[in-house]
Length: 562
Image 1 (cartoon, rainbow, N blue to C red):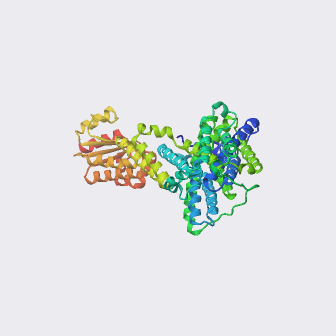
Image 2: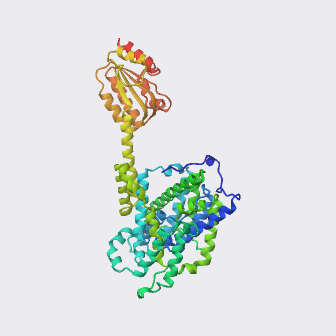
Image 3: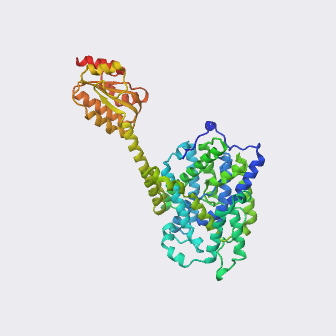
């Protein structure tokens, strides 16, 4: 996955996003199309999260508006997404279980804190580092989130309320859910998913399948399937009309640590989600976004959403792609989308109350299926067995244990394996020869000098980036030195000398001095030389043994043992 880039104009501060009047028609049409898609998704995510449909709707408006106004990706559409909803669902469930009275207020406070974290990430210019994660970890994490979303929708899909306890609660109660399944609502959910999957491409150009499924499912629930089997169909219910009330941040001392950890996870996930979508937007529009500014915009959006009881959000790939394909090019498209959606919400809350929950469950479940990285799962074992195992481990930890543990363990193992491979490759760049027949890249004159020394002068050469994993190779190569009377440590081709590798070089030099050998350290420049100077290595040798090039050092070494 390509890491998020930073715009060449990132150094010049600009308060607002790129808002242009040169493409008003395209931006407005893109905004309308994105708003139409956002409506059913916002309803589905709001209900799925446990915060209610209104939270999803106002999250779509507020995150989308502020991210479009202050972000750094002109064509990005921001709204509640599947991954963010999964985390928010967990946050709401854990906080309301611990504190039923103030749990929901604390959950919205977590959304505000997540926005603050994102703003801080942007101000610290960490945008380009956010997505620099192994793809096996990203794939496993996103696939795990997709599976969580699927599992959490099983209850509503079967016509019942989601059991308490999240994923494990749903899995433990699955036999009971199946035993009490309601055929009418299962039918609605299946019809919804059939529409989402089977809508012809030509029809999709006219109306998004999510909206078609929402309308068809609601109409069927009010006509042909109304009260089927004598059971009342579960619906969204009344949605408060008017603008949302301000949510005062609420903290409980006993839950403070949990709230900050949840906010950090939510904020980081939002950063990854948004910046990966920004890269997708860049690839389509052939532009370059400002990742740090985008994080600030996302943070302001989530801060505003939390203040008014909305769900957290991030850059939404589907909404962004549809916006661009419909002509949206500047932030005017995202602003118009948010305003249009707000008008629809204020005018149609009464109609939305009749929407069946089973229909929304079908929409959310389809989102979960789409989040799972099926393409990479099918090929991962062919590309790399270790990479596939990391991905499966991250999926399992994400679904069954904890989101933080999943990412932390996955990144740790992936980095350890990467460092091991890099160290093995770099270890081949640590070589020593005492005759002109070796495979080092040295001149004919230098080879003749080594031959003239008859094995009594050793050339110890390091090449490339010497990371900490190479220290063992330096020590191993040095320990293999037989009887010789002079050693030339050649650092001419070293591009980076890590602290651990520098200490290994120092140890090798000290041991050679203790054994009474003539020691030369040559070729170090730039940061490599400064690091050795700070270690005090050059103080252990006379200046005439360190200020030479390799050829002169070999000449002096041969003369010293003559």
